[in-house]
Length: 298
Image 1 (spheres, one colour):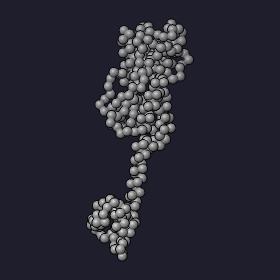
Image 2 (cartoon, rainbow, N blue to C red):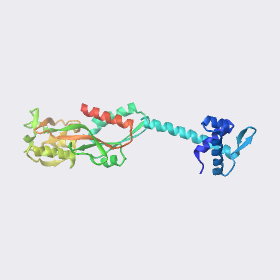
Image 3 (cartoon, rainbow, N blue to C red):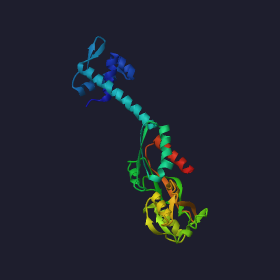
């Protein structure tokens, strides 16, 4: 197998016209350069240089290898430039997993910041369920994921959780409901009401149930919607009351009123999950910083 370093020495000899001149350029002794060229000729199994007066000129094989060495040299230089661009955040790809209600408030401003600060970085967005994205982060298929987790629960091994915000649940009541005139609603006041479920089983529903348990009751769910907009429609139709997180309210149904909840206030905690020990990525740092800013402003 031909040695690339020796091919570059051959190129220096050919372009300078002599072993001595090439040695001076490369910082070696002429003897060292000659020895390396001799080894390259053994690898190539043919002479690569021939003497002409006090200098040398390439044989046909030597000229061909010199041309390839020139191509390799340019490719190495391009690779070095590309590597620097990647490490400095000028190029690359950022894979992000997120859930729907975090999109507008958190992900959108973070993407905008990365595009402004790192325009050469491609941001790959994928909408997933709350928990499905953690294996992607741990196994390196995603650089960052937004997840809902209990506030006191640590992340899985190999994943670091960065707390972004606590998203409070709000009471959604039909217009004309006896509690609609209050500015805030005690959670216990909803204990005897029929409920419209807004969450599928998982950490978001757990946050609701834990708060209700602390208030001394378990909600009597008469309709399961699993969707915040649909839940509002059922509430507007008078089928029950519901809890919807602030980020999930979207466009409010004209037939409902929304009130803050106290005693206790149900809250879901939103985190950014990143892989422990992942290589430094300026674009990822910018994205995470924008998420924190958006979370603090929400």
